[in-house]
Structure formats: structure tokens, C-alpha cells
Length: 404
Image 1: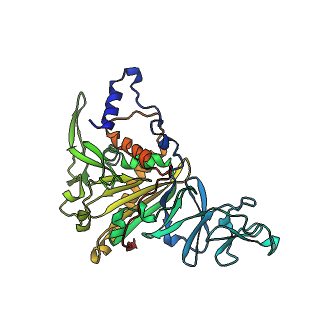
Image 2: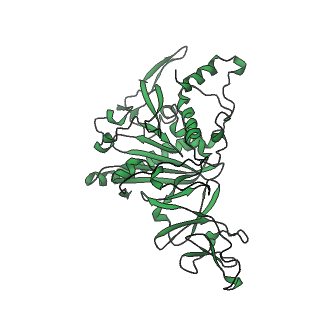
Image 3: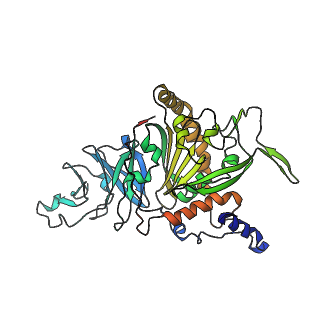
């Protein structure tokens, strides 16, 4: 019996008065204190096209950041002037390569965050070079702005270490939606995404699943990939109906349910050749800081829950096609006319409903929560609090992407 299964079995064996199960997250100390997210990772923040010469303010991991594009390069500085705490995102560019606070004209270099001038103190202000705001590393990949939020003592790894390999090694067409300020702590969103039990019940009446029969329950094995990066769910048995003692038979079969959900993308005869070549271990996988990958036969869904503060997160969704030529145009049309609303809207909106109202710990886990337990363990093992430095991606080709 696996360790997660043993833990759940032990919960069932305790006396009734103690059978409420795990009361808090103290078993996972890093996870428990990660209300503001996991530091020392790269996070996708917003679309590249949405950052221009006008500064904008965003929040990530409890820190407020100003984004601006200067000379084609996106810079990110702490969105607070040290003088009187005025947001720099309200400022202007009085000199090339700088941002100037609108209150007293304190001017900071975009390349290093160092004070270059205090305009109302004259050209010889003694503060120049002695005051600075925090600068955040930024990169642009896949049509997105990526930002690294870390601690000074930890080195900054290449952004490629925090992007799934297949997105860097193949030409892609991407459709997506980004929801800032989504209610709920990022951990609730992450656990919902990789949760084994909810999709087949919560989403059973969604438009996205409207013509597909979902299982009643699965027998699932939760394992790590050989490189120890991903946690993945493998379906060992799928049950399409079940008899519940004293209640009767329950299933989702209906005359309009024209197909059944495949456990793995390659089990579908229409699978895209590139997706088949990836040899993904299963349909659903997750990795840190929280990247969910759901592989469909013709495209792959990725999502990030980027923490903003203790109660909100930025929800980033991508749907990635590897088709080229006419297939690329067909995907764009399908995404814009149906998938963007049905999947990245109504379907994941049902998840947002649950993430908003979720309230745990305390909690009482059950067998399908093996996936949740394993994600928490992954955080304990692969967090970068102790100066962990991931290996860079060697010879990874530049990703070619077009957006929908």
C-alpha cells in the first residue's frame, strides 16, 4: 500500500470521536506557511501585448509591482517610492530608461531600480545612488510576461526551468484567458485543479462536458514522473455506473452523451501526432510552483494560480495546439467561437465558485484526495526556500507561438 493510501487507511481505523481526520496543514510546514505562494519561481503574469509605455500595477506573492515597457524591454520595479510611499505606476518617464514618481520627482533607473535623480532637490542631490527600489527579473516567452519573485540570497535560474519542456521544443498556437483578482487562496485553486474527485461531479452538467459521459468514480494511482518534476494521476480502473447500498444505481449515462472521456489522450483515435509523441504518462499532471497540465487528444490545457495575496490569486489559463497550417487556423476559430467561453469561461467558472467558498483546514480527507496529498508533499520536497537551484534546460530551442 502506498504511503498516501496508508495515511487514509489509518484515518479510517481510528476511534469515531477521532475519525474527523486531519485537522490542519501542520503535517506540511512549508505548505502551511505558503499563504503568499512559493518564492524563487518564475510566474506568468500577463500578456506581452498588454504591457506598453504606460506603467501598470500588478500584485504577486503579496508584493505590488510596476510593469513598463521601455525600448522594447519589459521592466518590473517595486511599485512604491521609498520617499513617501506613492505608487511609481502613477508616474511618468521624464528621461529615457527611467520612471519618475509623480509626487516629488524622484527618478529611478529601470535597469537597476537605483535613484538617478531627485528632481526637486537639484542635480547634486546626495541621495542619488544611495536609494533604490527592488527590481524583479522579467522575461517574455509564449506571448506572456514572466516575473521571478525570489529572495536575494537565491540565484535566479533561467525562465526555461519553470516552463514545461514541450512548450519550448515545439511550435505552438495559444489561446488563453487571464483572470486577475480571482477570489480564494492559491492553494485552494491548486488543489482544485489536480483534485481527482471533483471534475466528474461538479462539471457533469457543464457545456464543455455536455455531450461526453463522465465516470462515476475511478481507481487511481498517483505517482511521480521519472525526472521527479511532475506528479501525475494514472487511472487503473474507470467505473461508469455504480450501485450504492440502500440508495440505488447512479451514472451519468444519457441519450445525448455521445462519447466517454478517455483516461489518456493517446487512447483517442484522433490524437494529435505531436501530443502522441510526448508520451505523457497520463491525462492530468501537476508541478511546482503550480502548473496544471490536462492533455486532450488535440490540445493541452495549462493553468497557473499565481498568488496575489492571502485571499486572491491571478488565474492564468492556456490552451495549446501544436497544429500548423490550416489546422492552426481551425484551432484559432474553435477557440474564439466556443472553447474560450465554454471551457476557459463557464467550465472553469464552476471551479472558481468552489475555490471562493472553500474553507479548510479543518478538513476530512477521502481516498481520491491522494492527489491533493501528493501535491502537498511535492511542495515540501521541491520548494526553493533552502536555496535549491534547478538545472537549466540545455539546448532548448526557442518556442514559436501565435496567440488566439
